[in-house]
Amino acid sequence: MTWALHLHLIAAIAWIGGAFFMFLLGVSLRKKEDQQAVYPRIGPIYGYFETVALLILLTTGYFMISHNGLLAILFSNITNEVIDALRTKLYIVGIIVVLTVIHMTISLMTLHQEKTPLQKFFSRGSSMGIFLLNLVVLHYAMVLRDIL
Image (cartoon, rainbow, N blue to C red; front, side, top):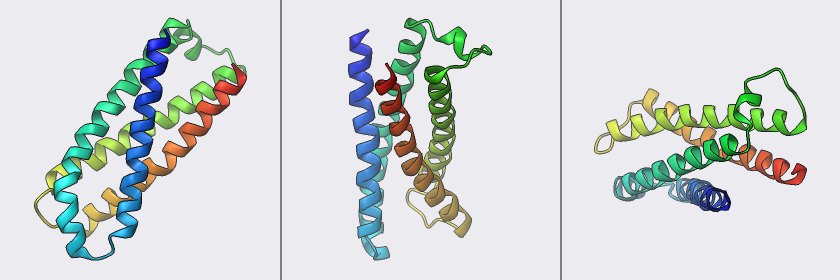
């Protein structure tokens, strides 16, 4: 069981750290030419790296929930501090997964071409949503660790 927690923490560090790096990169590269030089080169590498991290997070998270007998409880009417925090965390993770699919789809479709204004809006919006919601998930992870 500790292997799952360790893998989960490493993947969380990679996921959140990568999102933070890309956020800082996006803020610091103000010129369109700089963005066009950097993003097509590191975007796909980052995307695949983050996809693996997300899959590890989802797999180890499911394993830990199942291994601790919480799977059935999550879908019941039982409510307490731990279950409520875990449910909230999982709802937010679900939103992050949807936003990640949106962002990756747009990014892969427009890798070597100009994004339309609508694509830019959804790509940047989903990216910012992922970044901010990562911080909320991190908060709930700390809440759960404090409770347990």
